[in-house]
Length: 172
Image (tube, rainbow, N blue to C red; front, side):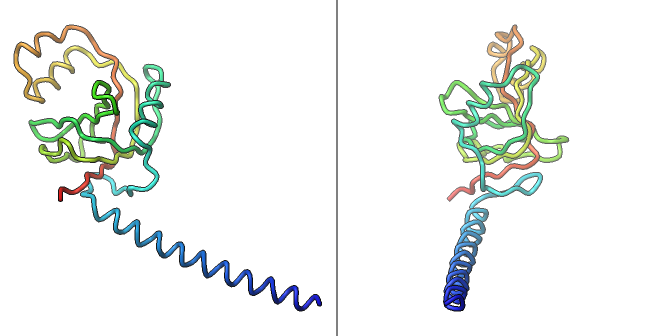
């Protein structure tokens, strides 16, 4: 009787492990397919386990000025530095709230035509105050008019992100 029980358990374990291996193989195939849909910049990252735009916005809202958190999230590129692609802004879901993204050690840039692309970023999210001088510099990089730049007179509390790596969804 004991032999039958042990034999049944061994058979069950073998079947379960085969199912698990098949599941892992199919997940690997999906990961490769998903990764091939993106162009990579900076540190190599994967698209898996990225927070949604809405989840990221909630995290930013809980931060105090000066706080930071390491995270990976996805969002839509609103704009890119038109001087050389050295920064971008990501929409955080309500067309008014955005994350200002710079690239670690100024070590990589993104294409200047990336507006509208889906992006996945890994790095450090922070809530910080940006000076008037920096805001004017970024407005100039974005191609804003002298009138628009002159209207910048107050520092601004912003959601910022220092990206180690970026994935941009390839255009079809």
